Length: 314
Ligand code: CP
Image 1 (spheres, rainbow, N blue to C red):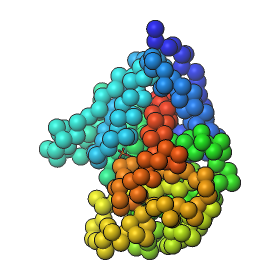
Image 2: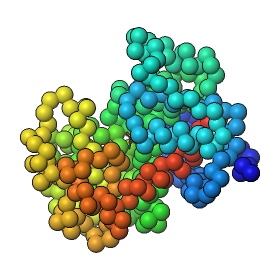
Image 3: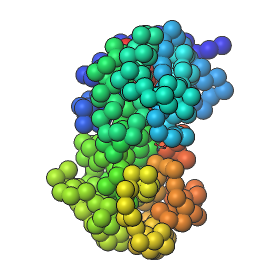
Image 4: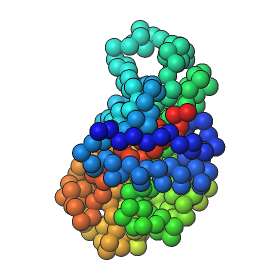
């Protein structure tokens, strides 16, 4: 028998989820509380609910995705929504149709929510101005990836029982990373101390204005960290060569056991995926079940996306 829950009115100040910057701390707490409720459901035999029965969710992914797209699709289906994931490669976008015309076309079909991933920063904001339904940003250019930061926060809370007072090192290609931006906003909001670690050419200018500590030496940046969050090298956003070689990058900025020793002994390793093993992270560390929570991030991503769909699908 499907689990039936009445659609309770949930108050949130925003119509859309476009970025962590738009959320208040009470919005964040509400999303995380809702997500916690779905963790157990996602481990049970019968995962189906009818919370969003009768609602239509469209997934619009202009950039490749494994984790985000599949978890939004599963999340919608587990909530009972009708989910349509558009195949961009077979769509009229390939014939030159613009994002705005695509949005207007989809809007005419009366969806209740659109999830969008796009290579341009601000694409989700633009879409939200052209459609009647709610929009969730699944990653726009190098600007924001709010559901990734929310699932990262939930993963930390599940393991460490808090975020306030933790020292969190975010390491790698900060310059091109929407994951880094959303995490910086969210972790600061929740009271963490954030260390940003990157080679100088992958470090945004004036990053300190976001209230973070800046390091180019990984060992110094990881000192006494509770969480070590590694980032993917965003080669697709690099117009010129930012790295002399993958081997040199790994030597200075890849997470290895000797560098991890500078963090606390119970530090957790995170990575949003997809990982470049042997470049960003030692492959054994990535799979170390005593230290790495990378698989948990993926698991909790479904719960967080269910919470976001439930809250923003009005
Ligand atoms: N973390 C993340 O956004 O992964 P995908 O690109 O696979 O969705």
